[in-house]
Every structure is written in C-alpha cells, then in structure tokens.
Image: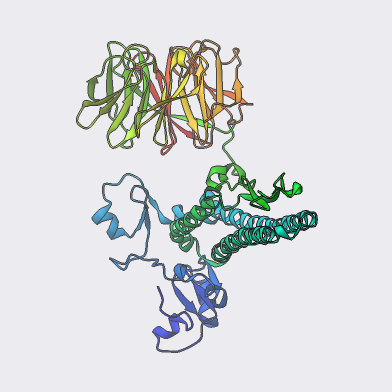
Length: 560
C-alpha cells in the first residue's frame, strides 16, 4: 500500500511534490488535480474508482493497511481461489494453485460485493445489535425506576406497620431497613456494573457500524472484499457478548416486596424479625436473535431465476453402466457417480463418458458426496445402514447402522437427512452418529429429499406430493398436480431454490418455484427420458444430471 496519499504519487515519481486531492484505490496512490484529469481519461485507468482524499482517509485503519497486491511476489491480485479462500497473483497460481479447480478472476469475485448477502448481513447485524443494546438500556433503566418505586412502597408499609407496635420493635425495624437497603444497593450496583459493560460494547459496536458505513461509501470493491472476513470475525465476537446477556441472566427482572410476620400485629414477645424482603425473578422478554439465524438472504430481496426463464442445453448423453439406477451425483472434478440398486454396486464415470471403476456395496439407493473423496450410499429397506465409501481407496470405509429403512439422503451442515420409510423423515448426526426424527409421518418407499437454506423438500410417490418443510418439521407448502407430475421420484434444488423433480410415471422432469406456487415441465420423453429415476443439480457448475432407470443419463447446462 502507499505510505502517504497526501502527495501525488505520479508527481512524486518525477521528484515533484504536489498535494493529492483524490486517491485511486486500484492504483493505490494519491493524485493531484492535473494527474487526476489524465487518470480519468487514460484508457488503462478511466474506469477506476477514485475517492476524495479526505473521505478516503476516514476509512478504518485496518482497511487502509490491507495489502492489495501479493506480498510474496509484489504483484497485483488477479485471481481468487475458492478452495483456499485466498487472493492470488499469477505467480501464486503457478506455484501453489495450479491444480485447484475453483479459481476465478478477482474482478468477478469482487463484483457487487457491497450488495452481497454477506456484506448486507453485517450491516443488518450491526443495526440489530445497536437496536438491541438500546432496548437493553431502556429496560434496565425502567427496572431501576421500578425497583426504586418498590423500595418506596416497602418503606411505606414498614412505617405503617411500625406505627401499630411499640418501641420494642425499633431494632427489628432498623435491621429490616438495613437489609432492604443492602439488597437494593447490591441490585443497583449489579445493574450499573452491567450497564457499564453494555455501554462499552455499545460504543465498540457503533464504531463498527460507523466503519461499515465508511467502507460502504468510500472503500473499493477489493478493499471491501478483503476486509469482509475480518469484519465478520469482529462482529462474531460482539454477537457472543450479545448472546451472553440473556444466557447470564443479566436481564432477569427482580421484584421486591415485603412479607410482614403475622404475629407482629399481636405484639407477641417471641417475634424475632420485623419482616422479610422477597426477591422474585422474571425471565427476560428481550430476546436477541442472531442475524444469521434470521436468514438474512430471505430479508434482502435478491432476484431469483424465474422458472420460465430456465434454459437447458444438452452437454452429453452418458452410459451409466448400471441397471436399476436409484441415485446419482457429481464430484468436484467432473466425474459422475451412479448407484445400481441390484445386485448392488456404485459406478464412477469419467467426464468423457468412459467407465472409471466400480465398487460392490450391497443394495445401493441414493448417493451424495461428503467431501474428501467420501460418498454416502443409502441402502433402502434391506440393510438398515448407510455406507461411507472412499472412492480414492475404492472401498467401504464405514457403515452407519441406523435401524431403519433409508432411501433418499442429503447432507445439511454436519447432518445426514434421510427418508426413513415408515419412520418418517430422520436426521443422522455425523458428529456422534445419533439419530433424531424431523417428521413422524410415514413416507413411501423410494422417497427422495433435498434441502435449501432452512427448508427440507421431499417426495412421496404414494400420494404424488412434493412437500416443503422447515428443519423443525413444520410444513410450508405442498405441491400436487397429477396432470403434470405422477410418482415423484428423485429431487434436487438449484442456487435460487427452484426444485427439480423426476416424474417417473409421467416420464418427465418438472421444476417448481421456491414458494411451491408455480411449476413447469422442462424435460420429457421427447428428450430421451425412459423410466426416469433420479437427478442431481450441481450448484458449482449449474449442471443438471438426469438418469433413466436403466443404462442412460443426460447432462445439461442450466441457464436463464
């Protein structure tokens, strides 16, 4: 980065000292009025973003200190590696990322970063936290007033009770007042200490919010992109503090009242106390929901691909080398995987359509890629187990015994969600192999499942229904139209939430809109479908793999 933007970098190179009026973040140097004009009309720099130097210097120090070129090779960043989540120059690609599959031009990676879900989510998170802190301040101050009012009420009751008894109770009265003051003072002290902590974090969060606004207004797309991860880490730290407020019980309401001893009014000589301070606690009614839990992408309208605009272009017709294909998926390197239900094996096919290898697995139903050369293969209602297959070593690495039928499977975070037949929709944790139920309702044999954000979409060929539900099993919508979709089988979803479903008996592929209200047939027997079975949408390449029950599959490019 430039060491001093106060002076024009071009003039300085010519040993002329002139003050800068603007900064070009892409050139990483300041420009005077004359150089600014030349910079704006030069073919190589006319599209660069320039910012007045006074505005540029208001950016957070962390942003200004970010290197916009490779420290190792002193070359400008030109490539972004998705696999390693890092920016690279051309030499970095040659030396360290030559075999990486998912590299993109840095200009494509930073395009529209300020309008991205991740950047907008930070803005919403900051706003939510500031709003929450304000509500906490208001609540605690109201609690202080309420406590003081309760204190006054209790003191009044004490004095009224004291008027009915003799001086014998003076000592007890004083003891009780001291106990009351001690309790209230401790409560007030705790709340004031808590508010100091809240005020400190509020200032830091508002500073983050101010920095975020400055970045949004004045930072370049690259600076924003390179700062995004640090911003997310800073925000996560503050979110932990916010989450700790409710968990620590700091917002619990304490109610104070007076309980007068019933024998006091009889002036019994055996009365030992004047009364008792009662403290009751109510749970906080000011919940804080993390912005990520609100699914910020649902609150920020992002135009989705309309199902009417979807276009499928056939890339190739593929021999699956399998009979009774019940599952298919695509690997990151472009190879395709097909399962043969009986006699039971998994076939891996190269990009050029040649057969790579075959693994015997027993009855093989659905298949998904878990990463690191591991695929998961379900077994339907025979073995009650899901096989984890190492396709590098070409062997079954592990079998997860789940005690029920298992047809369609999908990976969601660190869980396998699978169709359990009569036992409904189930979830298997890959962390501890525990099994839990999402939906109890009986599913048909050969039901398939997919997920999109916080929803689960699954088929039931007994009822010809496609159902969309939350992760907690609450149904959001159902699709049933037997004139267009009969015996729904394999299912998958694209990046916009459009649902692709095989109709086995209707011999077609139907796409359903994310809200379940619209549908469209996109493939039929005219495109070579014969007893279509399963499909898989690859989210990285936007390719749709559709497999017939026997021998033939088709790979399509999907565009809009």
